[in-house]
Amino acid sequence: MNHDAVNPNLSAPLVAPRSAYRPSAMRRAVTTAVLGQILEWYDFFLYGTAAALVFGKLFFPVGTDPLIGTVAAFGGFAVGFIARPIGGVLSGHIGDRYGRKVVMMFTLLAMGTATTLMGLLPTYQQIGIAAPVLLVLLRILQGLAAGGEWSGSILLIHENAPASKRGALAAWSPCGAAFGFVLSTGAFLLVQNLAPADFHSWGWRVPFLGSVALVALGLWMRRSVGESAAFVEARATRRQSRMPVVDVLRQCPREVLTVFGLRFGEGGASYIFFAFSLAYSQFLGIKSSWVLGGLTLSMLLMIPVSLLVGHITDKVGRKPVYLVGSIAMVLVAWPYFALLGSGEYWKIITALLLANSLTLGILEGAQPAFISEMFPVHLRFSGLGVGREISSVLGGGLSPMIATALLAHYRSAVPVALYLGALGLVTVIATCFARETFPKAMRIKAQQSAE
Image 1 (cartoon, rainbow, N blue to C red):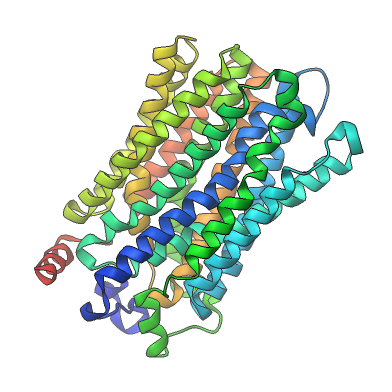
Image 2 (cartoon, rainbow, N blue to C red):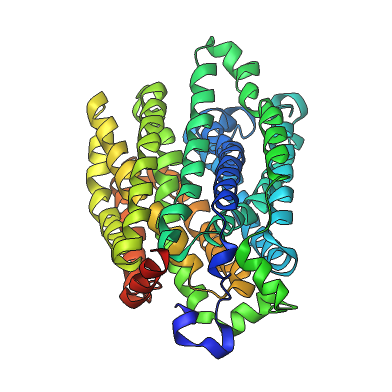
């Protein structure tokens, strides 16, 4: 719901006056947010790739079926997501009280520290049960950091952008996350060229240890960025909440639930397309380099799709575009696994392009502006932190583990395809119930102001 148009007295978003939007500050905000997202999600995605390829054997050697070890490794993956709402609540409180920048500095430092330490961990064979315990604790730290990173980066862009370009500019942030995935996958592709024994003994550690340099660069860049214009305006007018998490649940319950529904299916599908696809390819005996290469290509092509979609939402509104992406998720569920299960290279690439480049490209491009505009500025970080991150646990965090468990039990991808279709249906329903946050009258007014 756009509070600016519906309830100006209770919780209208405070928007900085047009004079506050300086092109140079906006460019700096976009660059810093995108590069920070690249570095942050490079770290976060490394665990998902390693969980599918090596963590099951090195840290969770359970039984004789390798899929069982992978399920356990994805359990650690899910634990990181369980920590995300806690990180989202903490980051939301700090971000709404003290600013977006302080949160973004902390999340990058915490993520980088956890990732680097993962690269130094002894394996189960070396220290026994302490190995998976330490790995899971570090994953929890990653989850706490991820809980605030996405919202902070989105808001830094969205709240510095003029109304007529918020969709297009905010779409840059998930593109940074996509490129972070490409970097993490590319790093694993490189080390997989090592001899299998070298890869399993030390090669897998290299991408994790490389995080040190990347995070140092990210922290240096984020020091130079200013606070978001809308937050500065809210603080100047003393429009702030002492307990923003409590207030957003009390004042905006529908919006929190809407964000939950919009994110639930999209998050679940994205991690099936990414993490589970690697485990499924190993189950089928498909070369992991094929899937890693296809994932890299599809995520790269997702970037221009998302940017185009963000621009389109500024012209036609957020809701219809998101609905198209939601329906695409339902339609792609069956052909995705049929193509992937064929074992043919070009069909595998086609499946990944349909899933990541097209379906997720539409959803990721439309989502940032759509869900940010549902909350007033002084409660926005908390609203996103609660709604989006709780859905990340039940959607993205559990989906690879559920999908792998279904595969291990049925030895078939059919139940997984049905599960993916159900996730898409949840997103379709949530989109239908969502209110348009950038209706035609507002689009016309924003365009006139821009001219």
